[in-house]
Image (tube, rainbow, N blue to C red; front, side, top):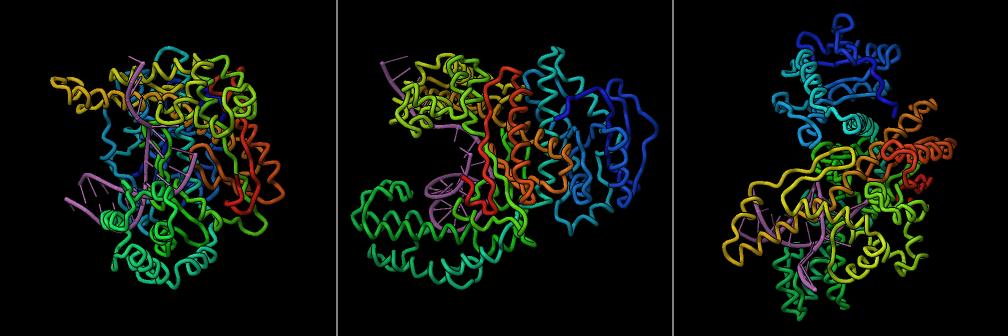
Length: 554
DNA sequence: TTCTTCACG
DNA sequence: ACGTACGTGAAGAAT
């Protein structure tokens, strides 16, 4: 990500008469640099392109839509952005930021991303998106930034990273993820049988349902009904608490195996069946919709198509077109490294200097194997103490005292109803009214217990928040740096980011550029660590797989 | 509308 | 000393 220098701002607002109004302003004084330019939809991309080349301004917009999808389609690259709606949410919740007038973002409903509605949309001028309103909102946001130079720089970095993240999300939505629809249909035919009408059971699934009914002596059983299935299992002599797969897996019996087989196939049919393909895959590409600014920790969500829960079993149909390949990169052991950086725990930082943090824990004889290393770290970061993870966690707690104190004090703050924040200053949501009420009503033992449980629950949330939210910031900055390096190398059109899941990025590029791209991704990861934590940060290695088939990564 | 289950990190 | 694994979205059943 380029450093934020006082330069030029370019506001993009809706023009009620035509399409868009663009106005340049000086970033330091806020003074307008010439009159606003009104452009038609046809002129828009060329106008933005020309200003980008001449000034490389920070593009200020209420939200990326509808601007970025048009720009992406025309391959117009924006280096810097400030997305007001996202900045508003961050500033509103950040403990470092000053008071900010509540701006009613619902006044200007988000334009539909459905292409068929866009023409209708563009003929109706959007309200609440005038240049004046955007300029005022931007000024208010600047005024809300803290005076302290360190806090200010951090929050500014977060706003820039979040904004460029939104641009990347828009680019990914437009590009889509290469999806072999024919292979997917073939897989459905093989496992489910011929296609049937929606909400009907395909032949092989129906046969399996009947087999489950027969095995449990309950003809006509609907295995999709947890109640029916649980009763049938009990009658057949299986003393299970629920019908959850992990509980059934403990039982070694052919009847139960049939149930598990049904569950697996039923899931494929309902979540990634023919209807899913019809709705989400077009022209060989899966186009999910990424949602920023809703998850408290700053992680992204996706609505539609369940993009962030893509099962490993279906990834075999994610295939790069001929001549292209995927470069799949993920931040190795990201959360423990983040914890080492934010807690300044010397011992954990020593572990974090290694490319394989878990191996270091094994070599130091703190844990016996990788599974325990991972389990122990999760226990520390999530606040777990149940079962086996407690013992493993205890070994780590002894050796990483400063890291433990860091997450423990975050947990204590949460239990007291206080807020915590990420490294860059993203604040966690305040304790809600019901929670506060529960803390006060402790007259009898039962309500006291309930209040304590709620407090501990919130403590686990804030304990995790400080790590997860900072990890999300690292990932955002990693992506931003990668995009910038790719652009600098002149590969923006050739190497495209096509997928993102929390700590993993998938790029698609021509086969001959894969190694070079991998180098840029590694460099971006190292830069992200330094951007966040300075020159003496822990190591942030990434593991990279080059493959034309997503299922073969990892 | 809420609950249960299961997919992902 | 004690106690609790964190965060999401989607589908279908249950209410």
